Length: 369
Ligand code: OSB
Ligand code: MG
Image 1 (cartoon, protein in one colour):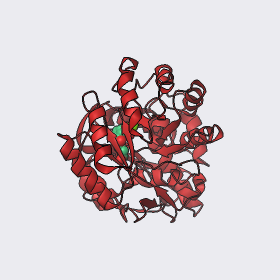
Image 2 (spheres, rainbow, N blue to C red):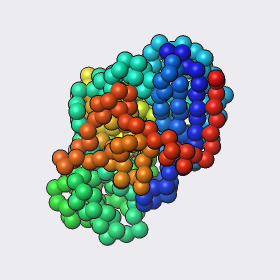
Image 3 (cartoon, rainbow, N blue to C red):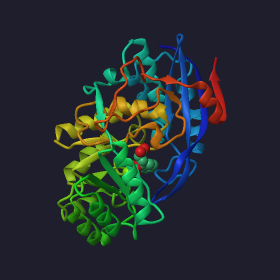
């Protein structure tokens, strides 16, 4: 396929309710959307950054710069036979995984459309629906969190993840366990602790969680191994795994027993599949993480999560967990069995709502014809 034109937009979607993690609080999702045109088809990808570098080092500003100056010039006007031919074109550009992943996602969407197949099938997906959970932020009080959890359990979610940080951890988790009994429950610290605070995790260890996500430094798989050795609960790495080779090393060191896969963090769907496969070979289950994506990023994540080693519930909630109006039609919906169906139509398998995108666009540029 010859890539004729690329469009990049920054959109800013207000969240239905603010989302607070150990690294900060956000009231909207401010990401970039990439639209590639080739031979009469178009493909869409999301770069799920935010305006500040709090989850990782990328921002809307850095991603825009890298796309405009480096990634799109390597793609626009080029003949690209398959999305797997994209990573070599940008290999010498260090890092900037999210910016790369957004373009790669648009290429996968395009490529599946040319094959008249769903993205899920092209990626090697085997499931028709995916088990999902809901990720809930830090709230002003434990009562407010319990209320929120009860709302989402009523909506049909069957796994709950709560964000923790120093001062909002053992007691909160214990109260949630006490209030809701044997629900599937997990916590995510987003790197807020050091190994010196291992005692906190030994207390959480008694609460029978599915997993503890990214307790320690984002660049530290050594201390995670020391912590995992003290716990019965599986540690799950998110921020620490930025490529398939990191997964291999973390597994080898015993730094975790589960891995959270986010294609954006890993540099694209190709790298995500490679990471999935390494985990599978080592008997390590994975699940699909989220970055509050709009329906465009979420549809790609759903296709990815249909691969067989996604064996734990994913952070792929319905559109109405995040946004009053999503950018796709139909919006993502929760099934009565706590799953979300994997789209089966060609490409992402959903209709991209241009009028809605226009409404939320704050910046836009076009490259190529
Ligand atoms: O660490 O998983 C995370 C959202 C923004 C940044 C980091 C994380 C998250 C979530 C939300 O937990 C997952 C979702 O999209 O529902
Ligand atoms: Mg996380």
